[in-house]
View (cartoon, rainbow, N blue to C red):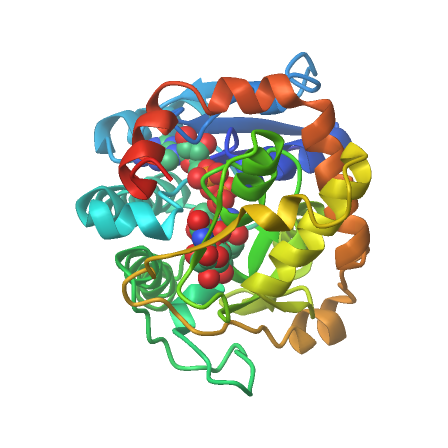
Length: 351
Ligand code: NAD
Ligand code: DAU
């Protein structure tokens, strides 16, 4: 069936994989990538598919209510998959307002525009909001986040995402807007912006720079290969139940220090360096304020109801990721110049 799907944040890390998944798999759909191209948005991520007949790029800022309404009126999307966001916790600690503007106000602008153009006919319409496990707060050493876990965000980033999740549900409960949500754990893979732990360490190992480990390095994250997240979004978008949310995770918990150890080992092997070379770069630095101890997703619902599970092991996914970064060092150089470099210098003060 022909559909026009507006995907926000498609030039970013996860969004670019979602765009590729949809444009290639569904040639009958018209995919519109709406992105403001902030420091994190990069059209180089989509070079291989930008010529395809069913793909259109629109540069726009979701905080601009009038522009967003005009775009919805022009393209009349049947569905929205909303990924555009300010996504980096450390940046949210420095500048919370930018996160409220994009993640909260931007989401409301999209909800209002969808509501306005769908008001006469909700048949076949869907607003899929892509969110994070960080809305649930922090776990102790045991337990998992389920879809029923109470929201308890701690950082300005997670508070802004929690707020957007509540608004999406409120538009469903109040106006009957057809919605689904996905709350995913930490992604990694090709095109990951090198302000986040894994690509930052890959970049620093390549440049013999320190690997900054916050606090004691015992913080735990549940890592998922980004293409498996894109496939989960495809599945929930098409088969998820109206009004419901689905947790997505890798069944793959790592303490940061162990993850960095595995990364160093693989990097030494791939670069033909003596074992232990990269690990010498590990440097313990000041902790992140309000640092959440542990995230871990219980993905039973999406597994049992929709048959989703991760397709690669972490060791395989990490190897694929490192190979991609080694083969795309020009991409790394492009994104680490300019604006990002200014941010890096401020965050790590010359480390
Ligand atoms: P990213 O920072 O790599 O990309 C964000 C994209 O949004 C960029 O292309 C950027 O240009 C665009 N954008 C930002 N502000 C905008 C605005 N005002 N108007 C229009 N476009 C704007 O983010 P990501 O890591 O790909 O995350 C995508 C989504 O997935 C986010 O909503 C994030 O909260 C969620 N998420 C991320 C992870 C993760 O591990 N990265 C895990 C779970 C959920
Ligand atoms: O859990 C999902 C979330 O994962 C997403 O919603 C966010 O958008 C995404 O950025 C990610 O958030 P984290 O804060 O978990 O990711 P980050 O890569 O920034 O950090 C991972 C862990 O590594 C965390 O415990 C902090 C630590 N860390 C991070 C950096 C950048 C370090 O020890 N040193 C660093 O330099």
